[in-house]
Image 1: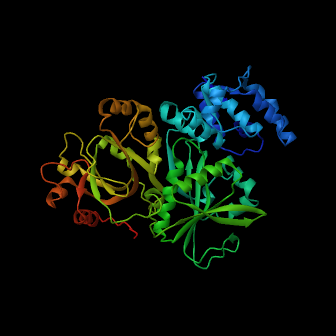
Image 2: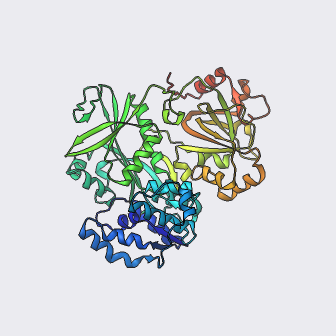
Image 3: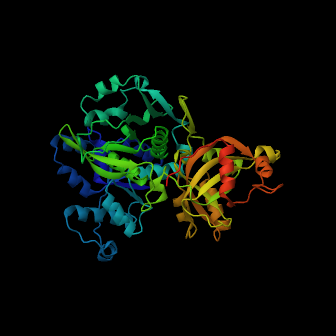
Length: 506
């Protein structure tokens, strides 16, 4: 297998000043999967033109560790017609040559951080063979679970003073913010969230700060209006294929609700790919561009998310965690062998450890998928789901089957055209293995649907099947059917008796 690496990947890898800290994970996966690391002669020419002579020399010395394509195959007219975008520059021409290597099957995949190049790949039908760093790591993780290097990951709340600041994870902060180490030391008794590998290597870090109406925002343009805000002060997640970024986004939202703020905001520099990926993640969950923050002679992008109101012009996912009561409510059964791993209890509390451990990527995803071939009963995005864990075989299900979780429907996909599309939709968000998903496609493709949902909250008190019988919510001696619709009164009673409170917005 041959992996063609774009010039930007080589520069990320060999540059003395590291600009993308996911690059190490990428090369470990390439080695594990025994890919030959290939570069194009045009990439060597580009590196020789690199503006920093010292960096150019350092990279040139290391190029011998890569396999260089020995012959150049220029794109033909039919290929260029498929792209439909005329070449306007030397860079465009090089991009087309790289894509043509994949299209002609001279290499198996291409890895690039160039978003425009990846968009061209979509037009050519090569999206499953042209990857960003993060996309390749995610695909490798999903397809090769036995090769995952972490036995267990944990998101923890800890004090700054307990964090190993010498970890290279923090180097990018030192580069971006002069005096970062002193600032970090002064925070020694404040709390933050961290994710470490088994060996203690930092993979994610998050610091949150509540700001009141009197906060000084003179360095933000245009100025903020006075209101209570949650500042995402320090936030970084390395790409691991585990959707850790979504896990940290959930922590941000939980804190925003708990601290009763009106708005969340974050400031990010835009000169590094990893920060562009982080901004894209936040925008996926409803953060919008507001303005800029000016300091140290550089501008930072300011992203903002409104709380306490619902914007009908954007999706339910982008509104989350702002959810509406005025919707349909359903019960949805899930087998016990799938329940715990798909729906780990991630409710924040005052304990140090968050009950959120494991090495299954779907556990970390905020948006998850449920697969069904039962009639949907009219369920639609924005509706609320109460997950009902069926009792184990051989147990008295009156007592062992329980309602556990509130979730919100994000999307329903029923017109799935191929097995490959099903696998792509479910990537890292489903409890099912690739073989199980293929089996579902084989046996149930005509009725198969994927329900994408967002975890909202675990019920504080679990209500049993016996409770549902006694309160005439489900007719004894049966359990609830898939997508059994609840009246508002039934839903309210379950929420009240489970001692679970959810904040709704108008």
